[in-house]
Amino acid sequence: MNKYPADLPDPVALQASPPDYVALTAAIKLWAAELGFADLRVSDANLDHADAGLQSWLLAGFNGQMDYMAAHGKKRSQPAQLVPGTLRVISVRMNYLPQDAAPDWRAQEWRRLADPAAAVVSVYARGRDYHKVLRQRLQKLTDKIAAEIGPFGHRVFTDSAPVMEVELAQQAGLGWRGKHTLLLDKDAGSVFFLGEIYTDLPLPVDPPTTSHCGSCSACIDVCPTKAIVGPYRLDARRCISYLTIELKDSIPLELRPLIGNRVLGCDDCQLVCPWNKFAQKASLPDFDVRNALDTATLIELFAWTEAEFTQRLEGSAIRRIGYQRWLRNMAVGLGNAAQQRPNDPAMLAALRARENDPSELVREHVSWALAQHRSASQQQP
Image (cartoon, rainbow, N blue to C red):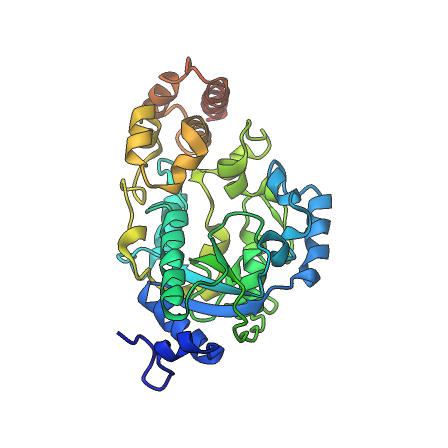
């Protein structure tokens, strides 16, 4: 069946002669919408202008333990070095706000952050692993293209490999880079994932959009650890998302109290952003909340055995951090709860049950958490 709009050339004709790339691009955008993508744009494959900023960021050491950010030479800024023959980059976004999210979902998130017993998992990680969802959908999109024009050079990416996805998406006009370094769109805020297709097709490119952050500094001001050291500049070593996900070792002592009850990721800069009042709900059920991660408590999640962690989080991006870091993060949350609930019997029992955990990493953070409760109780009048 001809999936092109009525006013576009028949795909059979496209296969018989050089494709009409304008018509093909219009068709690709329609197919992307059918596959659940909220938007698709095309850019060229030259990011030379972004390389200096990346090198400056790396020289400052802001990547922390993310050594992969410094690897691969020019492959980040020169997509054709990563995938030879690349002429264009197709960038897509997919919304992830759960379909049953309440109109006041941001207010609900702030209330959970204020509850010391709550285990706050970043919204993006509460459903299915986005890497799998986007990669599968992007592959289906390339299959549709190949079915219409024949084999073509391409490779799909979803937050993987040396790809400057925000820079590419900005260049393609999917949005602009906010001061928190995330991509922003006037109609969707920043509650979406990005994905890319590197291709050798000479598709027409879309124009970039303009920035609409103005003088707003809400994201910079709200960051609990002051990781946003300036507009468009993030010190990942202080970012709670880095500390709870990427960092493999002990969380620095001075940063632990600032993490609060955020046990995986941090949404504060997105929650406070005015543009996220326009955040759109996911078109797919994949990002619906699993394991009640929008209401779970620290004690509940800290009690999971390794087998439960593995089974319950099958198909979740959370499994990537491993069981030890999961427990480490929960211990920090339970320790920080001492500021409002010192010597809470249930919390103390949960922590003491892990005092002799096989993992040194877990034991160290449990010991710290228990010390926080002792210290807080001594300070009570």
